[in-house]
Amino acid sequence: MGISVSAYRPLIGVTLDVEQPGGYSRFPWYALRVNYMDAIVAAGGLPVALSHEPDIAAQIVARLDGLVVTGGAFDVDPVLFGAGDRHVTVTTKDRRTAFELGVVRAALDRDMPVLGICGGEQLLNVALGGSLIQHIPDRFPEALAHEQPNPRDEPGHTVSVDPGTLLARLVGRQTLSVNSAHHQAVDRIAPGAVRNAAAPDGVIEGIEHPGFRYCLGVQWHPEFLIDTGDRLIFDGLVAAALETR
Image 1: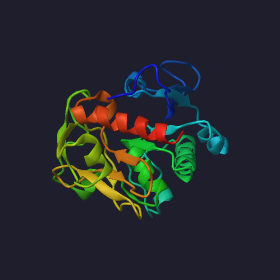
Image 2: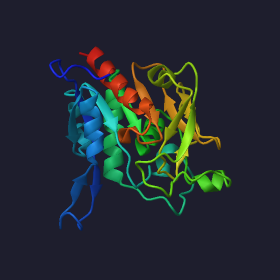
Image 3: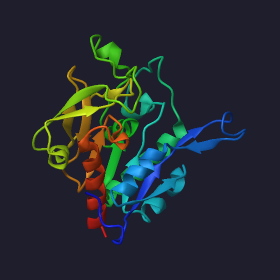
Image 4: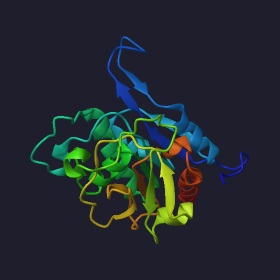
């Protein structure tokens, strides 16, 4: 469970998405679903939104106790993991990615807890030196629907949790029901990192690096709290952030 409201709340930085003019504003604007923040608050953390400033990423991290890298409807540039081609479906947000790589690397340099969610898990793997599948159907023609047709606040499939991992210790379960909103996935796991979850079709659904206090990535969106294990992921992040104080 989360910490008492009377206790110190560690400051958890949360990365934002960014959109071009249109819709909310005639000017560029940041965006983030409310449930990311709600999940951190419920776990006992104090979330703070991070603007995309790659040049001062390390200075930003120096003020934080933990970091959450969120998802979004875009992809990590294949150049960043050494791919020789670029799939037609790939779209990028280069300044956001540069900033997220900067804060992830700065956080890990300080052994600060990092949680990567969906695209954030993919970016975490790239930041650590791994690579990505650019389009799941090309690699797994018989793959299940990783861009689920039903609402994102409902489960899309299950994942098996690898025993002996941080994720397994956090959730205390062998199987989780998760939502699914991605067309890319981890390909080559970064050196030193390990898989912690997989979908029934073999697609990697989570990674972590045991060389850090809390370096965890999950391909689903635990902020929707679909499974009882989802809240425990955020509880673990906040607990680890308290240990850095």
